[in-house]
Amino acid sequence: MTHPPIADSTPVAPAHTRAGATVRRARPLSPTAPVCDTAAMIRTATPADIPVIHAMVRELAAYEKALDEARASEAQLAEALFGERTAAFAHIAEDDATGEPVGFALWFLNFSTWRGVHGIHLEDLYVRPGARGGGHGKALLTELARICVERGYERLEWSVLDWNEPSITFYRALGARPQDEWTVYRLTDDALRALGSHG
Image (cartoon, rainbow, N blue to C red; front, side, top):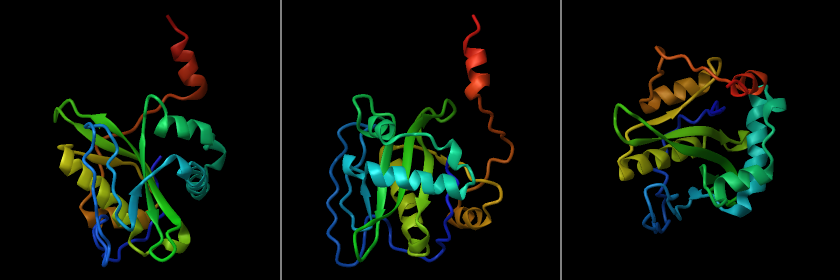
């Protein structure tokens, strides 16, 4: 789930620019291929990032008071992001000075029957505490918005816990609006197995 603890209201440069940085953006191979971005702050994830992505997924789950529910393994993440049937994509935010990963966004495509085009569902967005306020959260969202615009996707959506006021304020400042008229339903564990075993 995407309930990032971000206090990132300081204006930052777009994800693909930084003073002194040379940007080379490769053309996507297909509408669903991850965008290759060599920008200084944000880059696409590689298989070598799996351990740090897994660690940050667990850090995010701990922040959301649901660490026991974060059961995905490194192998599962590797298969989802880089396996034969890619199910999701990820971007890494790096520290400006050290180049160390300090945040990530993990996302996949959805589809709107009303708009008739794909959109992006942002599953996880996280910036480590020591890097918050440096613009990394905004840079990650800026990069995903850029991908939407470039590919003709018309929605960028995510969820946030209703008690996470710093993130809600941050999202509203970007122009995002809550879909208060909708309620999310989920089948999982015993309820999912019970329904799936019928018929």
